[in-house]
Image (cartoon, rainbow, N blue to C red; front, top):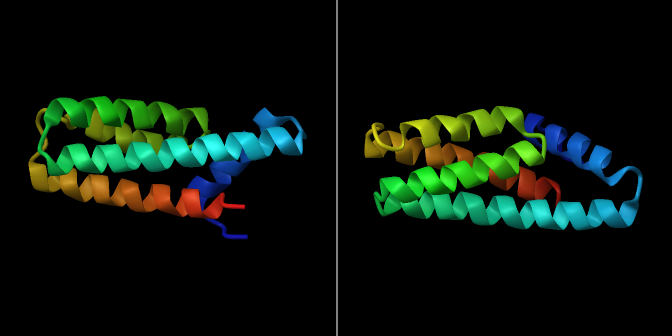
Length: 113
């Protein structure tokens, strides 16, 4: 099993939310994996399109999913994009979105059955 801080936070939160029910845990993992993967992809797409309103929207949405899954450190990075969507230079947004997408991929892959 892969060890990574974001992944460790997600596992701990999902285990707590599932309250020992393996079926509930499997369902939560599926929901979180889908939500994080689509959220990171949507954010990356908005950054590439240089659509700052959509960058703000998708970063806000992804931040919420990350916080729900217990990934506070990664959520804080996404919040930086959310708050900076209107002022950060496009290359900086791309760099940050790429880092976030990579970290989300580690979690999505690490939670795979």
